[in-house]
Length: 76
Image (cartoon, rainbow, N blue to C red; front, side):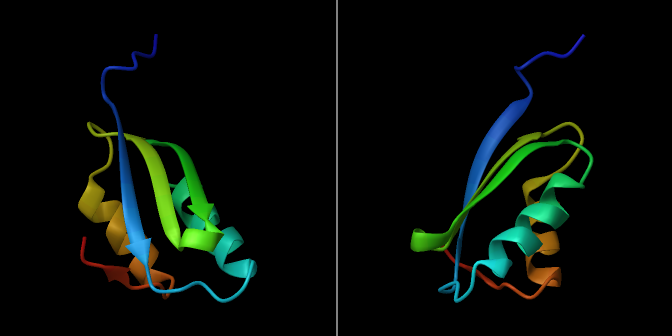
């Protein structure tokens, strides 16, 4: 049985995204990570919103995945 109490939402601000394929690339890598419930790239604002189980994956790991595919995260 799955509980929702461990689900956390975090947002990352990226440099300006320049093409729609960026969405597919970022969402693809995040949605394959165990513990990620949903990842959504907001193209117009260059933000990424991720819902994840904080017992299975950390915010730092998610940021690392985004940067690993070539999208630096801006400090908030």
